[in-house]
Length: 185
Image 1 (tube, rainbow, N blue to C red):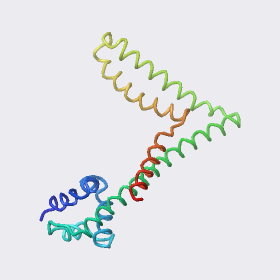
Image 2: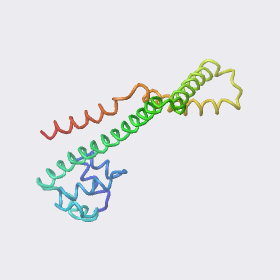
Image 3: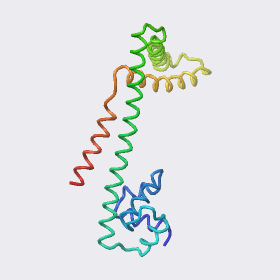
Image 4: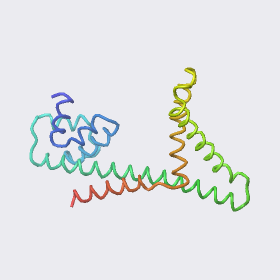
């Protein structure tokens, strides 16, 4: 039986793991499958494929794959939360640095506010250029203004998150963990 077949078999029980097997989380999915189906997290993809090559799953294997799916979702949520925590810590550190510089009277403390103002002004200038004067722009500037608009949109999001904070990612990660915990319970 080919790789596609055993992955399809896994997909019939666990669409989440089957999707992961075809993407960047394939290694993690195989490791979790190997642990739950074979009892050996260090088993190779070939080992997992060989066990599942029969084309039919026992009741124990189905339960093991469902458990593997839950464990995979939990690990993925933990990774997402860890990444969000790191990002939020980075923003908090930048804010603390700005405050510390301001408290010491350093001129560098004006760096973040000045850059933020430039990004916001550029963002709204691009909005004006694209949506108000879009038809009047010379053809050779249209592409540049659109490129700047995209870049400044990203910058605008960063500026608002820096100054206003963002708990959306933390809420999303927390919601995912709560969902998985409820599924397990």
